[in-house]
Length: 258
Image (cartoon, rainbow, N blue to C red; front, side, top):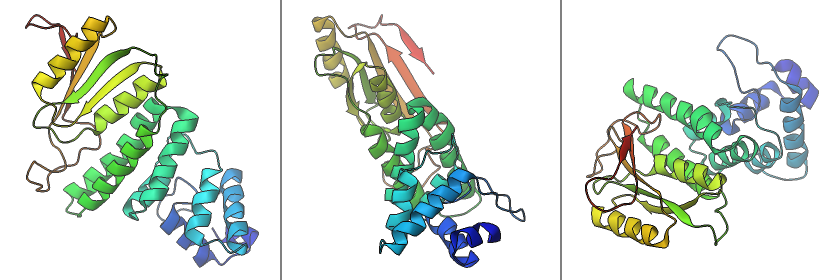
């Protein structure tokens, strides 16, 4: 870190503060070991330093510099730093950059879920992380909702809905984004979807001749129960059940649970 600070012309304490507060710098670091700065890390930090010299605040400069850099593949450290710093905007920018470069599935499986798993682990150890979990859930949902939808003429072939008592729709947000990324028309009903509504939507799609799948999500082990009390986290997807069935009426519809 000292060598990098000298190259950038800033005190070592300043560089350490930037890393801690804004998640800018090396993605991987082991306590007691030297931080290893890549050329991409140094380029991003130089950009940040230039913006600060031009009068931009350090937080805004870090966001702009990181937004212009190619993100590391599945690097969780910047998102963890943003999450535990309750920096919702920077967290969303990190997720959005990863989405643009690597797509929805890799972002969900290799970036978002591992970060939630860390939060869950620290919460099990007694650390109060419910605010961090909620902030990150918002940033993830906001970022995935920005994935472009297919053209308006694309037939809707998938319905995504939570069970009537389920308030957590984040796994379905990821599934919706992944399907949209592949050009699939999706109808998102969201949390607490009544059974009748799903049947009505499914029947409508069947009538149009374009509907072939309904996903029904029920999550167990959520961050909050229905009256808002703190529980486990939702993040790593454990306890999530997604059922898929053809949107046909009657009890004979094929079902798949995963």
